[in-house]
Image (tube, rainbow, N blue to C red; front, side, top):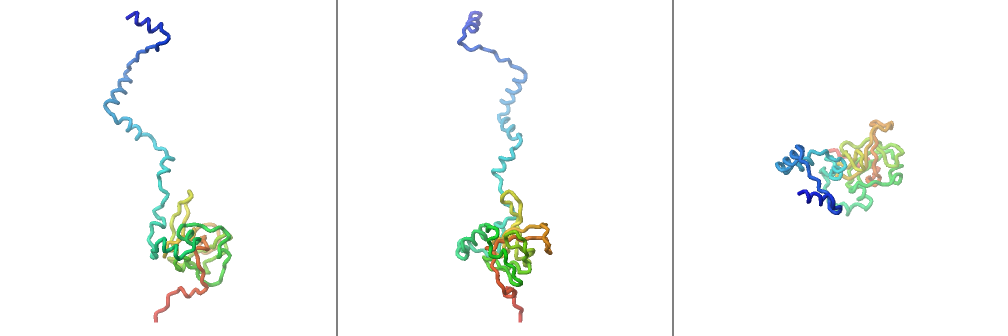
Length: 211
């Protein structure tokens, strides 16, 4: 035994053998891993979650989104493409936005008339609702009762209120509150001109009286 020990110490090419000291802590860890093979899994489950990882799997869709709603006009995508031009389809059906200051009705301020949905022709706003906001899009402080539906829009990392046609779900724009405009509602319905079609005859959309 003594000669073997000497060979280990003298030879520089052989690794030094260091005996492992078994402590009470070592015994505890070893025994616990043998008794519970799922100890490592439990430890991972108990670890705190990492917020940015969950963000990759979370959904930005809101339960109040317009896709979840049902509207009276239930035309298919192909049917809408048949009646809308590409720009109307992009904005009304794909929730696009026209460039500021380019819309037909941005500087349009008639004394009478109705702004209808460019998709289904449902009346949405009257000329009396329109006001000069200087925002670059047609602005209305109110709508015809029941004509416009509001949804929470959480796209682009911000929370806004989207407005759509209550008859077909066509995207109109967004509504903003508390901007300080001197209007009866202190609201601004910021609407794409492409989403609208103006008619001067305000009475044409009113129901006829029964004889």
